[in-house]
Image (cartoon, rainbow, N blue to C red; front, side, top):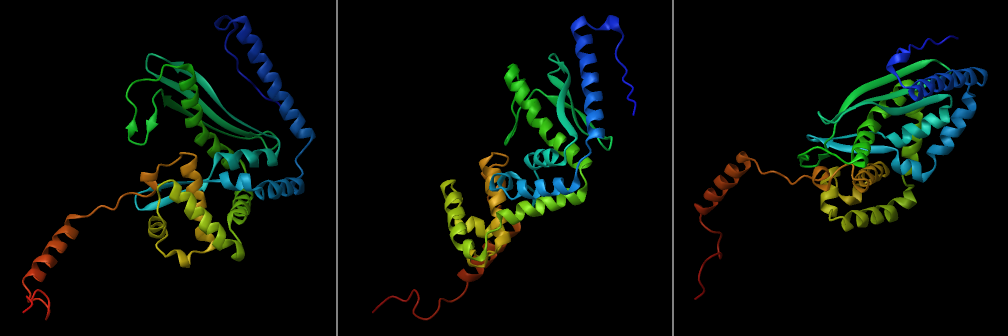
Length: 284
């Protein structure tokens, strides 16, 4: 297998940059050679995936939850993607900052995943403004601290590299891993009651009531199933990691104009009726 790499002209780079570029090319060629000499053992890959996804720590971080409109979107997280990449072996992934423009306040980033054995490469280049995207909108002003810019770039790149990893991995492999993680979250029939009580108490410490949870699931607590518990557990983990705010997960119900007019009409209709016998009649 041959790999052609086009490097910039020597005069356009410093000696240190030229050395580093050559080292990076040699490193990639060596990684490809090792991957071809030591192909992955699929039975071992499957066993390692099952072991990893049975761990409560990974299962607790394996999914994200985010509300959009009247629906709640869920999916596999970057934590699961990284764990599966390790299980799959011979897979290289990461995030790189290609260029930074401080005058415009943005960084050009590249997220990638490369199956060195199958020679499947997926990448995503994107621009990251040096601004923080908060719950109430983008924070005014540019980030100037090197640490703040780095953390902002890494946070924005995590979602892209996650999608690159999942694009390289077989869909059946990812689906099997996700189901294993859900199974690790779901309580047994005996565990459902105690674990539900603990989860409701955890939400309560964050200012979220049991009634809000019942409204979220559209069913009373007495009817909750193991799948309902798993859904709330994923949501709680997203809240704890600050991937979603309490206001986003449990928005305040909005009263529509039609509902106000209907309530007003009903009130006027009641005031025009005779009160029931014994109601509002003064005593002798």
